[in-house]
Image (cartoon, rainbow, N blue to C red; front, side, top):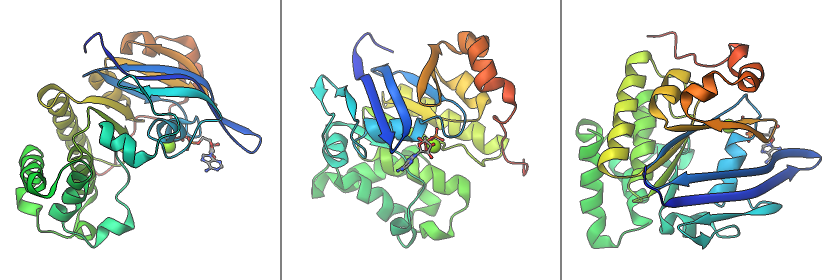
Length: 249
Ligand SMILES: Nc1ncnc2c1ncn2[C@@H]1O[C@H](COP(=O)(O)OP(=O)(O)O)[C@@H](O)[C@H]1O
Ligand SMILES: [Mg+2]
């Protein structure tokens, strides 16, 4: 983590009809930092990601990335500035091979000549050589998740938002993913913001954690502060409905 902020969200609010999904949230992320965003289902985590990466526009508040106001910018432009996010692999990718899906990511930022070089780097980094020609629709969950993180990485982000990439993985798959994310952070110097229910991952991976509940930021701090925070325990950690990896482990 450096002392330079890469992202600042100030007072961002988003309502859907009468529901306030994200309510005056302030959040900042520093360069090369790993932060977590946790909270119960429906807390507003995905909506907050959508507001940060331009899929939704806030009703109020501002988002600044690398000192540039990106509040009303399109996701594509924001991606070109160096912010990427993971999606569950969408249907448009299922007919593509792993290599093609990663190439789609690389084209966001690279010209034709540089694309293949980037694709090779990403395939090598994530150890995808053996499945590079496989169709995405034929992959298991853990490989699909990895390909999705790889596709986002191919856009050369300085900040990568990951929405529940560990959901459903076995303990062994989770540990592998965590070590890849750590390497991505340390070697490629990418700041990560992870939304995750798997507390084992959040607590050991993240330097700081933000907690959302019913659209409001109810706590932020280092993992130890968060796990001992009474309000967080009552709203989330004490409910016992988090932290489950797949029973297949
Ligand atoms: N496009 C939408 N239209 C209406 N309601 C939405 C929409 N997106 C999210 N919501 C609602 O906003 C709240 C926050 O949702 P979400 O951001 O998906 O939470 P989380 O990711 O923390 O589970 C939920 O009550 C959800 O039903
Ligand atoms: Mg969500």
